[in-house]
Image (cartoon, rainbow, N blue to C red):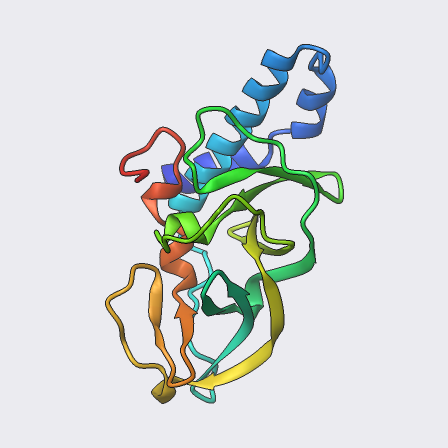
Length: 201
């Protein structure tokens, strides 16, 4: 086992619930600091996957199986294999000092989940004053992340040959129907997701 795998195992074995219970939640500064530290730790794990991480490739029948959703002016597809749930967006708790594409954290089934706004990460140049009403919760490398969506559509199978490459970060390509097929692995291993890392623009 490599040092990286050992570090990941040790991180995943931390009893976060015990830590949270020991905190004085009446102290706002301590609460925000604890959330920020947890966000930082989770972002590091996304950016440093283990050797056993799932490689998101086309299915054996040469199709991508995608959950499709609308966000801003664009329509996207994300690998359905990593989607654990979809739900309405609940109250977001902002984390001071986090990159702007992290809109905050939410409580999902007792777990604190980081919420990612692709409109900001992908620099779509749209009005972001309104928070999209839906969340796509994904699990990757034993960690969870929620992605904002204006409308979650359906599960679709898209033939690989129907996806044309485009010059767009975190995308495999686009279909004739203007569906942007996200490159899940590239997105969730991006160094930009590390709090305190480089290039948060």
